[in-house]
Image (tube, rainbow, N blue to C red; front, side):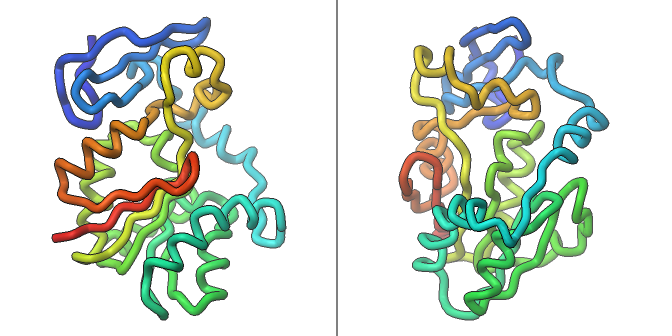
Length: 212
């Protein structure tokens, strides 16, 4: 068995296996994760991302992102300074937030790799459909906490694990770039551990406020 990549707990168990990959679950934070030996390498991962065709002028994509943009804008002050982490090849959420008067920096491992933006602190950060791709969630999670000012917000979009029966037929796990899967229990664990206020919006938006 492999240690949990999020909380490092050694108590992990077999969760599910399909014809392509095996999935483990942490008994502490409830994270479900792909066997690390079955992840894509960086070249194959980027080739998959290159197929994405996100466009700020796509009204359907804007509607999708409005599910996080609208609740986030209710939380942050006017003219806030934010970071869109993992913005991908066609940044759109940043455009939507800039249209509302906020200033947004961009970071993406492959498409906007300017690490100078990771040396600043922000009123808020967003990461839409990002966290499920992360190979080292323990490091990225701590990085996010360090990027946000006390009182600031972290806004995430990701589909969440419900239970094993739903997982078996879950299309979300079939994307080979998706390697970790959070549940509400996982976010509740992190919120308690790291003293964050937690709010779930719908089925796939998670807002966390840094209280210290």
